[in-house]
Amino acid sequence: MKRPSFPILVLFLAALGGADPSAAGGAPRVGEAGPDLLLPLGPGEGTRLSAILAAPGVKAVVIDVTSTTCPYSRRADGKLPGLVRKAKGALFLSVYPGAGETAEGLAAYGKQAGLEHRLRIDPGGRLARALGAEVTPTFYLFDTSGILRYRGNLAGLSPVLEAVLGGDAVLTGRTIPAGCTIRWRAPEGGGRKPGKPESASPGRPKPGAPPPGAAAAGGVPPLSDEALAWLGKLLSSLGSGDELVRRSAEAAILALGRGALPHLRKARETARGPARARLGDLVRRLERMGRGPFGSPRRIDRRGRDFFDVQREFIERRLTLTEDQKKALEEAMARLKKREADARRLMESGERKAARAAFEDLRRQLRKELESILTEEQLRELDRIRRRMGPRVRPGRDR
Image (tube, rainbow, N blue to C red):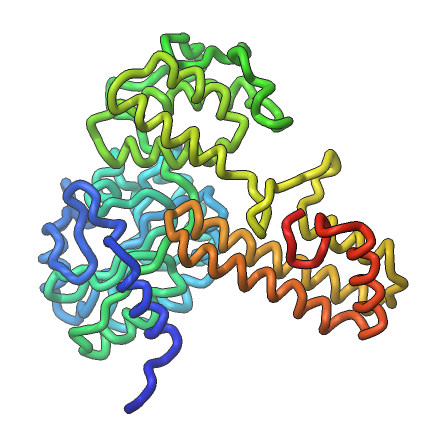
């Protein structure tokens, strides 16, 4: 029996990993026919997905909910033109639902980034909401039957798209998109006018006036006035009847970090019912944040160094390294920091089992990297130093 290729195996395992995250509200589910979406193409209000899929030569439609400012989107846009040129028979559409996107800015960005497929503003985020998008970029692939065959990041799109264009009617895939929380456009006639100060109300922080207990965030710098004003709007959105708005607000609050903790605790004191439960959940999730790669509190000193920066400087200070060893050590720690960020995203997205496995692998990889860079004598000396200092700084142990 032929072994499945690695990308397909990854997508198959992802498909077994629990409930489809797109299944919020009436959003389409992977492997099922979705609604006949109205796409911002053509004159008037747009064109139905079914009409596009029925057009001659169209074998698939790829919709990218994206942004001109999000660094994750920009990184994906650097790889997208090659995929568009390669995928003959696929119609690509990038839609931009975020506040601040304009047709003029979109045209300039598309020219600068070399994007030759269709780029469209998504008025009011109508299409993005119908798809269940929460972050940019998120890719959706529909086959000619209108079945959603893929939802997730750009890296996992290629094997499923290749299968669809090749006539495979079975393969589907789902990955966790990593990106920026969508800043939804305010509905017409609503929202606050630019420059108008945000008024304080029960449970909402007043800009410039941190509530009692602000120092309880464990030494984390307090939020700026602008961040406080944004937090106030997000707290108001937690009571929205639109589930996508609520979930986007929760993700944005988590992105503010532990500096938001005292304000959330204060808001929770006066909240009632479901709002109180949501705030309690956010407080618990933020309290769990800020933890190091092996479960201990994440310590960042006043010079902004994190765990792997401290490890590198500790080794360089205690051992005599060659210039090549120093360079290799710096590169290794940079790779480990990137893997730690990936594992942390798994944890924050609820994939706890996968995150724990990633952290354990990170622990082993740290030792392997050191073994590949240091000599046996240097490794023995490093172990002796760490034993004398106690378990607090042993390799691969909690700090």
